[in-house]
Image (tube, rainbow, N blue to C red):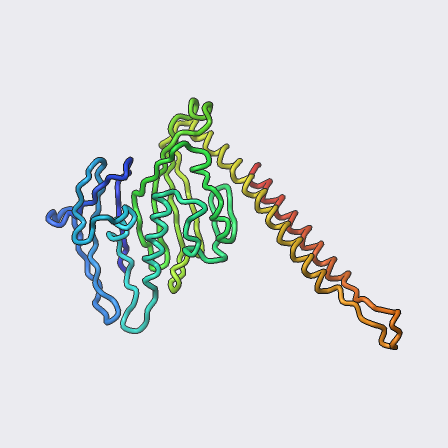
Length: 302
């Protein structure tokens, strides 16, 4: 299987140009995949981004395309089909484009949730969660940094279902004291997305952070702020869990309050079913959920 790589240097302004170096054999590698009936050969292209260059050599139809699209255009997604079966879907490429756009724009709230599976799992050094609805919440980058500037250095398909994006965010803390002590933060992020090969949706998302380019005070600010942010988000998770459990208990109670007339025919007597066992089960589940969330909170803060 051919590994796909698209590389780009950090950019500080939207006006960037991507050059395909086709004449220099030293910087261009050409590979061909077997031409099966349902797939075609794809050429690997070396991409470079230069700051402050408004001209681009992207070929026909290259004008007006976003930087995310231009980088993804330089990727290879491997052999989607062979002569026997298809092992992946074109939706994988569509997901890669959308994820790159979200990173370039640091989208929050209005990001395309359809890119993620309903039960997607997320994990970073200080926080983990399940469910795509939590992607609607604000990002730490936009919450803690003033005018954060993202740039993508590399996008690579490690396999037909594993996408890795290496990107960097630069910015100063919003607080005056944080900006004075920490200066500019340079956060290098390594995001790995495991994709469903049929739907193209993200089923697992992991992030790793590298603060080596930031000053020691900047690193201290990042970890303290990030842990505080994770604690607040864990509190929100707890509130959502309580609300969901309360709604379920209320609905179950309404549906289980069955009253039956006396079988002997006495209109003044009625019987009600005993739901104490079910009520106890819900209380136990609620208690276990609270214990689990407290454990997660202590693990984050300690």
